[in-house]
Image (cartoon, rainbow, N blue to C red; front, side, top):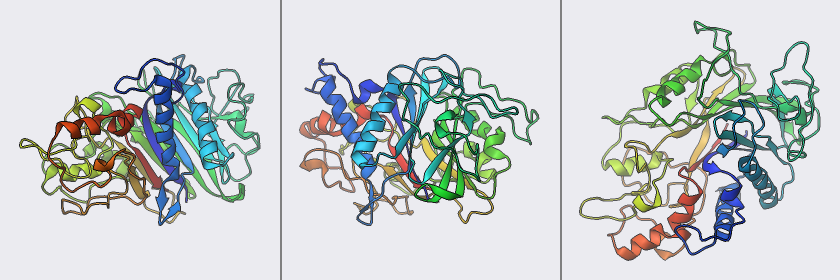
Length: 450
């Protein structure tokens, strides 16, 4: 079993978690350098999730929306984004007391964006699937004859192990620090353009990373091959078509090996539940489901009333601080766990847009992601602190993340939020509460076992 934590950390860069500025932080009395330290501390709490009283750390961490300049797909990310990714690697190693955490050097997926993938190399081997030619790239696919490879230069020296990939998996014999993620894809066998390269134009490309899951302590044999397809769909009306078209990619849809698990995860910018009665799952997921993928966050049925109580269990996107609520008025009743902070300030029906899907080879006894949990520091995870205010078996998750709000009023969430007061509004939206969490990201993290 491998545990994956995925998170869209909004505009992730070094100034998010290591800002040297002494200017005042907007929305608080802190300086920007102090605020960045607090964001990093909040992020670090996610490495200590628990289950059954024991710490249950992730094995792989995926961060999308890493900032970068843009030179072309597959080129090494540059600027404050990769600097922030390296800062987080240092923090991850320190907080977990585990020097085996590694970082796949982030590559550019499209204009201004890259992806950072961290992994615990104790039992995981990075296998590419592409090769690193040196310099700033771009990464290249394996071919015959094999292209020349080189280790990553500074600042990514030591980000990957130098050990060679063992037999029984991809890129056997190549040093892990001479491998790279892939940003190029071909059309699937069932597509009219089968075998041809997919042109993503100006869209962000999927980010494909592969690992070999070992039997223990990083030693052979290989138990499973893991393919991660990290997605950040366009934030516009084309998101649904982009999600559907992922099934047109050979690497996603064709020829899964018996010992392989494929995982499609990310920010799909498509709401899970259509804005209609009975709030059924969006058709945009149908193609991947037809190819054998199972959704991690899914609706077991139509929503009972009250509707805003039901939808909060699926929420992964949260509103800007000035529009978020956690109280009840004559015009609006806020219910646990989403109250009035889950959703979008700009777009209606935009609250459950992140997900993790998995597809297992015939030799693996599994049907989908397990123990899927939305990690919510506002009311805490799992969502079992309050008896569900709605029937219908909403997904409450498995892993625990304690409430990260300061102050007594938010330590014990209620099924129905208390009445509005100016003091409660100020406390909720203050920096030490929702303000700090929302300043970190407009998304909540998701963890799942595959």
